[in-house]
Image (cartoon, helix red, strand yellow):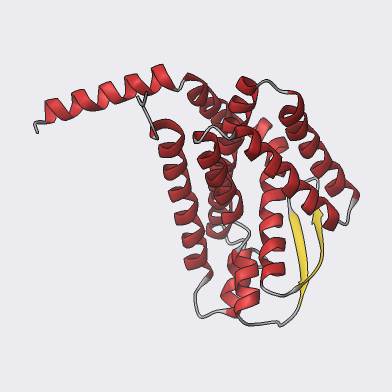
Length: 241
């Protein structure tokens, strides 16, 4: 196959994406703006923090640790406290569960959206938010989770199928883009010498691997999630009748 033929195939594929997936493309653009524009990111990042701390909490419970509570702060930081052994696989997986959580949630949602199950994806998101709310231990955290849940629930309950599809796709894009930006912020902070209490630093203290290696793993997982989610949302079943 010549380079010209390959280029023509790429152009035709992109044209099919634009023709068949205009709503998904618009959702991607809106989510990308929300993540890259500093003003919108300052507000919307709390959604990523909810997913991040929820990931810690879920893994802690699965690992058999005691979950004390979750705190979400106005500066978009968060804290999940669990009890149990101070070393060992359970604690490692608990610290590991935070940064990949938004990306994995976005990827799982993308699979459902691509399968025309946007409403189911939204109700699963509501259920996860309710489960998170039960363990939140501060006022701002309760407000943040309630506000997010109210928005998602309103679209799931009252929204027309077309609105549900677009909103669910935008939420998936936002989670995978937001998960990647959160990791980039972690790595930027480490390059500036801000070491101490980040998940990567805590993992470095209880494992033989350096914090930079854990941060690199977070970056790899987030990047792969973006690529796979984009393929699922834009190209899966493209042109099928």
